[in-house]
Image (tube, rainbow, N blue to C red):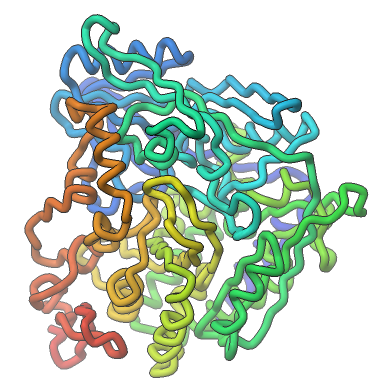
Length: 579
């Protein structure tokens, strides 16, 4: 097993050190149509509930006026409307309209308008513009966008509407919506106004803080105006430390370093501190952040890694996962986790322009004529397939959460190897926001990815561990879910976690009185309409188990209390129960 892992990582090292562009296939478009209708997929090939999202019609506006016309047609016909970008990297069904009497608006072709105003230090951009295109445009004008998510495979409208973020408690903070100074929405209207109208909002308008994180429920975002700063450089270094005290050090790190984050590998007892700050523009260096997980991988490598992980799951081989995890962490340390001083990583610090250091996603930018490589999770190649849980904690509660996770880890550290194969716990920082569905206090964000089975009925190795961590975060410590990530159970009770939710719903009634932007997802999440618990529903996070049938008793998984957080109810493997 170890020799196979080293071979795979050797192949990855060759890819990472190659000075020529990778030959790879770009991601597939999220909308596919045939004679019977259109299918909307996300980039991972499966929604949270594994059910397809069928839509009757799809509109592809190219201008703001065409966008208004698309909303007007739907409004006149009393249809439900949802909006998807050309990327579709959301995990929940935010963009899925009801299958009956509905229409989908894609902003994939509404993606050309980028107007940089250097005098006002702003940029106004069409909602469908790709994040990388926006960044390259403003950098060429001698200015920088300060906040952006780490993954660039997103549209500007999608980033803003879902509360996407980087990492910073400095200045306006790491959330993109807190750098929005103006926003335009296309909303339904009466017959006298042509059934749809464009509403322009800016800071100080009563509806502005509702619209900055709108989840696609107030209307269709048409244009966004973002604040900019003079172009700057950053200096990044990673420091691999023992994790014994990092719960007492994260505050100091976030306060002293503008773009700091921490990656925690619990099974390896390692905390990786990212020291990330601005440096003078004349500082030497033209580095780039080409994050390892977002690079193109040979399809043979991605599919072999997936097959290896499936085999370890089937054999219940925890030690094999730990070998894989240790190798993964060691390899990331060797190559700077994708940081490049020039074309390769040669050592710290890595200094580069903001536009190259903030966000990455090189697997997106590949010629379509080759099929050798792809993004590792491309569903066409049977590559990586995973869940992503993202919990947003009020900063004062984060320390106790980490201590509880350490208690759970210390019972059997090898049980945590499953997430260290991916990226451990990625810990970032978001500043308090005035947006109604933003964060009401300075917050700490934790992301972790873990294995997802090919079939929803197949339980996972150490399933109970990740369910306990998940429930510990969202219920014991009251963490909020990232709107564009997470399994369904993470959104339980989310209405009560946002003190300005009632203001958001009032704005929704004002802008969309006919509820044409509602869907089953929004009804369940924002209005709390619970669905029935089916057999096996806890296996995929569609429910919290309360009976054994919600797990998989036939495969030995029964509903049991948590080991550290006793109020958690999780699906735990019991060998004596396996048939």
